[in-house]
Every structure is written in structure tokens, then in C-alpha cells.
Length: 87
Image 1 (tube, one colour):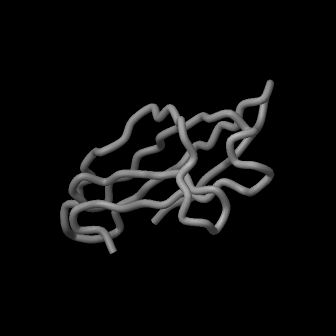
Image 2 (cartoon, one colour):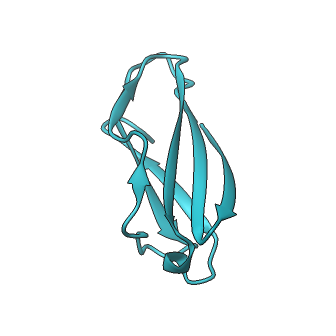
Image 3 (cartoon, helix red, strand yellow):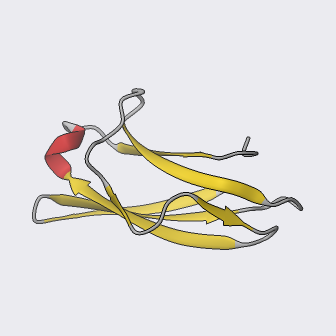
């Protein structure tokens, strides 16, 4: 499960993403990616506070990412979550 808040300041977009493991199993090697709207194109470069981590059952973590607003070319940032055993 995820939720996010987005803000812009001085040409930078900052996204805070809360990731929660609602299952009874370890979520292993969880990673996040920022896409340009609904496209499959990743925003680059991006600067994560944390990425590639594991979550215990019921555990949640908030991570932040920032990137130059001009790099999303007027689209909304879409955060995609993946991992070893993530659906």
C-alpha cells in the first residue's frame, strides 16, 4: 500500500511516499521509481532518501525523492513500487 504527497519549490518537485506492507510476509527488496505521468519513461535524475529496502509484516516507511520539475515535462509524477515478492 502506498500514499504520497507532492510539493514544488524553486524548480524542484519533492514527493514523500509512505509504503506499507499489509501482508503477513516479508516484503523483500522494495524499490520505487518515478514515471513521467502514465508513460513508462522514468524521471532521471532523481534523488531518493532511501531505496531498495525490506519491510516486515505490518511495517511502514516514508521515503522522499526530489527531482527537477522540468524533467517531468508538465506531467504528474507517478510513483511505481516493485520488489522481489511485491504484487
